[in-house]
Length: 145
Image (cartoon, rainbow, N blue to C red):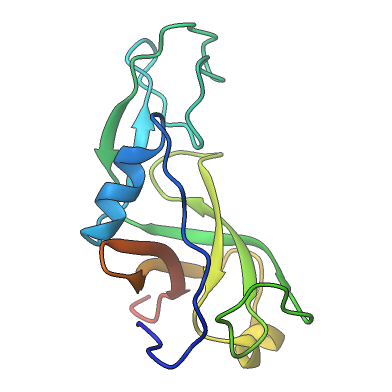
């Protein structure tokens, strides 16, 4: 999905907590951190688990399906970031693996589908290769359902 003619796009700057997420994304895999104390998935990871309050969650990164449902969306009509040729559709996805496990991303189907979007529509992860070694998890409508 790389747009070779686009202006340089911003890239993530992984830190110690998020590096496994970005390394997996570069391999086109979606992973989420799981607390070793309560086994709940959380995103983003933090020094304290939101689910159980553990101050030593010892996050284990596990691969997830990348399937979910649309919770909310908006179209960014004025694009402030370089490298986007059309207004991005920003979406809030609840992943199938666990109620409340959410990820905010971009819908790659484009703004022309926004009029037909409804809460609960199925989406699946795709990956946008921004540069060599950097891929962003994005979503597309799941047409298999």
